[in-house]
Length: 326
Image (tube, rainbow, N blue to C red; front, side, top):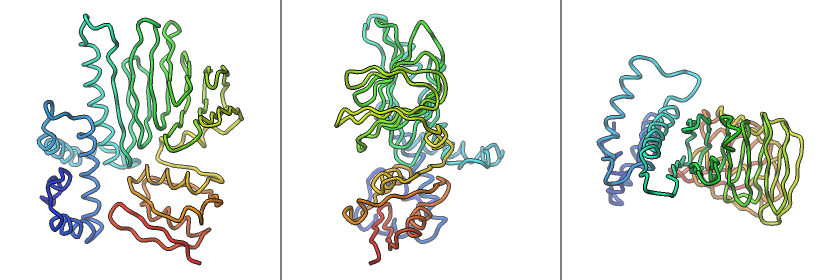
């Protein structure tokens, strides 16, 4: 392993050292894979650590030793990327940490203890909340969870995308607050997509029943229906859909059907943790359809786009520049 990885992630390299480091990263595919694998682990620790609680470098080295042992024992499934699963494990471990904090909160404090989780770009995570509810969080998503003992409700605040399998409790409803709307459930399976850079919030029900309050109205959703709320225009709509189309992301695939180019690119940036520059005016009226597997490199997506629209592209570290061929 290159001994410059940790100093680079900590921002300790000067410009000349950074230049040498990136030359090493992109010298071959093995170095590139090694860097991004270590970066996934670093990001997972960094987003949950504080200076007083965790020595990130020490914990990072410990985790690498654990990973080495796991590889020898061949305990990792071949169906999913080893490093994605390890990132998820790390996040869930810290999730258990918040549960401990939640249980041990002071009896003298009337306010509920809020447990928070952030999944950075390029990663996904599955976790189980203290009430037994299972949650899958997509890339670039943030969620907080707490119990409101006054209203006797389980409450989630969400930004980004999440798939919920809610543990049923008729005496304590499960509430999801997301970008101007509130979702109420007792026990059900549904998906919510509500990214900050998207005008619409999509709530897709797979099983059970949910009640949504938005724009001064209350709407009850049935299975195989999708509720769409435009936060900027306050417009509401409801349609029947194939729910698999909107939930398959948790299995590492993304299906896009007649998708706007801007929306497609935003998803690619989240999934691969890259920045993509392109002439917005040229692509503004273009739509694309296809399937992306997260196990494929980002170059695969660019080739799919090139099938429909001739483009040339340049990859500079984590930045991609797209230009149409006229």
